[in-house]
Length: 135
Length: 402
Image (cartoon, rainbow over all chains, first blue to last red; front, side):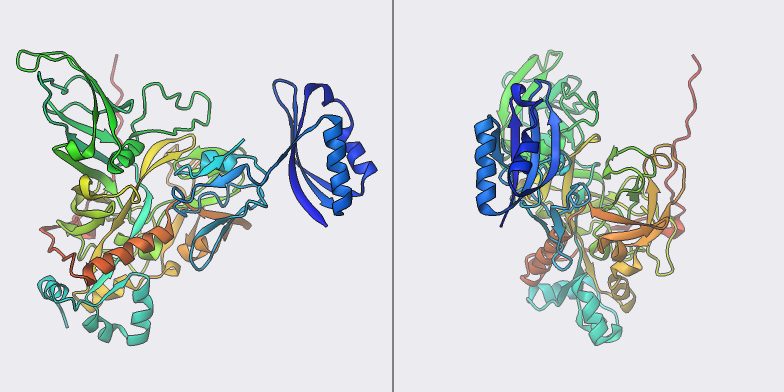
């Protein structure tokens, strides 16, 4: 089984095509839309969580690439600068998906990048600006 | 039994002082009992590490050739304006100052990525800072323009001087409105979506000495990674705040004005900080040693998070409009559990001050004392007590007739 979060960038010409619909119909994949928007330049951005068999997942990814969708992995996008983080914990109630967790014994805050959907809200709300977004 | 600070210092010099942090002492007293522990323990160390806006530093940069009088002109450190209303080459930089061209909240919420607090952090880190100054020129100080790099090692004096730090308890922040708000207590989600707090609780200096029996003017402290002193009571000092039965204030009460040599401090303990939609500030590390002179003083240091009450305040309406209303009361133990129940709703909580760093400060101070590197001082004057009648007055606004 595969469970991955991916970033899909749709060039302007693909925005009105039913690509995700085909992806799911033609392959046995479960999907969750974590984020979807159309930018000022009318390009589409979608963050998807895809679950399914490795073989189906790979076929699905091949289909997206063939259709002209630009794929990026998500987990590497947001990172924590460990030197700047003071473990205050301000991020904990800011993150919409609970990617930050407070250790009740050490009071340290951990960042689970696998849960992160790359919304970027922690970047601007972290008081010492320890969270960094990489494109 | 009672001890004196002099006796404790003799033990520190001999390397025999018995020291615990304000966290450790809770278990020690539970195990040994108050009487025996008071005889055995010499010092309890406290710590706090949180954003403290009323912080700043002053510098004497030395005289240029020909001379310039910065006083009355304009001076900028890395584009952040410094206060020049002093003599020729003294400058004061406040933690919340920001570049003239910072967009502030023009696009709300503003990011405030760089300000006075960040300049202080970089200066302490030994980085070169760009000074740009203009002056009006006098016969004795003819120069009108100065652009130079400065470095902390070349300054005559670089002194951290914070007029209000180490708040003894603080508001717990909530948002009862239906839109997200951006405050100095962080981002507050609508409809009681989250709650934020900012105190080290059982480790916090003034919560361990609630009636200021040992902490006074002249008390030597851990400040920004170096040593400093309590210079005065902090501004907005308010000993008459409502207190629980154990004497612990239920909201902001005492504060400390602190001073110390910036040159021996460290950027780990003075961190430039940005509050989204609010402004830049400085996160400051402070630790205060409490000499265990009596059982009563020891008893105060055993305070636990479940005995410290915080008052929840609505930052969407009651706070900005200065209405003295409370949404409820919670203990710091409840706040630290990650969720509190307010108005029948389970609300997630987040801290703005770092408890792990507060504990590190208390432990560092403990190590310094045990190693004989840090002796205690006898305060030269007391902070105003409950009996002083000192209160925190609102502004008596008197409109000026046109």
